[in-house]
Image 1 (cartoon, rainbow, N blue to C red):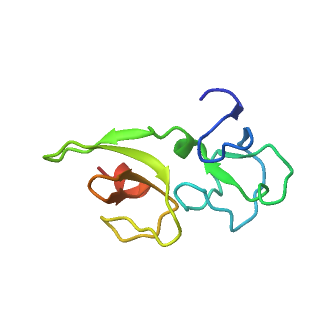
Image 2: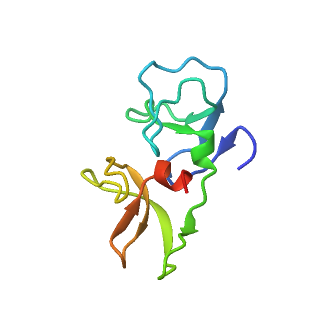
Length: 117
């Protein structure tokens, strides 16, 4: 993921452009971690299509691994994937749009809890 334009599974329809010093709307949040993107290098959609103008992705979230293995007795891999509305982190109970998930264990771990490991 180098350069100023990338493809990312969180927004497969269009390429994403890196914006480092561009003013972004004050309430803009990352589509993966749901945290503010203000003051952070951020990817935005390169398309002008309706619905894409508010897609934001922290550069750091774009670089997250798509699969992790947590140190548990089962050692199941967890894949970073979009979650339906109403999903939450099994560690902190935060609502999530994307989570590291294991369908076998029915476990979802948010980006923030994963980074705290």
